[in-house]
Image 1 (cartoon, rainbow, N blue to C red):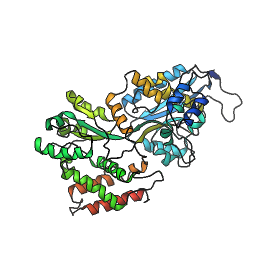
Image 2: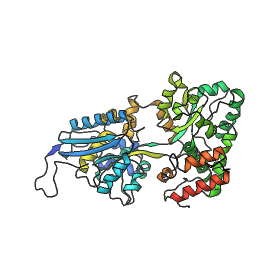
Image 3: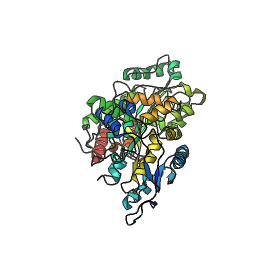
Length: 463
């Protein structure tokens, strides 16, 4: 994708026209940004200090911007871009968007050629993949006079720092997993939805006794089990399963302990076996008739994902309620996605204007809504909440995750050798649940622990 612009080229002698920008509440003074940093990222203080900044000039130019997603995200983002161009005459934004399938492959080629767009929706792990030396993405601190970073906590911003200490991307949203319960099924069993691990385990026997063998309080697939095991072991150790240095923090014996705990949930009729889950033939859990009928009474899902399950339940959608992250578990949150500016952009000021409009300007916020999750921008969250535009269940789930004091998440956890149809999480948890490997030989707890541990340390060396 070629970058085109009508601004000042390196060999030109005439500057592009300068235009005065309209005043906007989204702009923040340097003092407010400094105050936020002084307060440890507390946006409440900086928000009160923020006042309407003086009008700033901008250069007439053409920006390029791309993203992936579904139709509703495309429509909202295109509408925001159109509104931005109307608000700032002289800035043209050329967009490119599509589905996720093969998207990263195309972007990787652009990074190799140094031809990535001015503004780009990016994944958290792209910092390590494509910006390892800190030269691919612009340090957004350099455009903080335009992009209001004080709307984000210092902790959130620290997640997207590159190897040089620069801010490689603005985290649009964070996500983590919690439990969702079909309260109607629990009522049929005569018990409340669980709030502790002990209550969940006890529910397994109650379901079997009161409702029958086909009813389970929770269903978790292979990747779900990897995350649930991680939550369990992080509570045991008090540290991330892969730390910020990229080191795997569990021993092989601890991996064995985590796997044994997952197996104990099967044995206690808390979760069905993988064979039982796959035997239904559902493409995904929201398509499962066992889930839709209430036989699977609980799921362990992202805080941004309840809508599809509520929709699947149809008239019974209101039965799906948000649960807490059990005190015996220790969660993590990860950056759902980011926006980044190319370090090669000839118009970083104007690119930052577009980002600020979409993320921190009430006008842009109202258009973008929650197409990229519950926003981390304080003004975006408050604007949507006050307007009744936050999905209530997603917001409650997000709050449950954030209130659980989540730990750091390292993108190595989702390495392609670990996560995927034929990767370690799938093969290990399937074979361990079946009790045999693909060749039909016995597959023990020791076998599973050894294979999963080796898969982890191949990606993240042992601590």
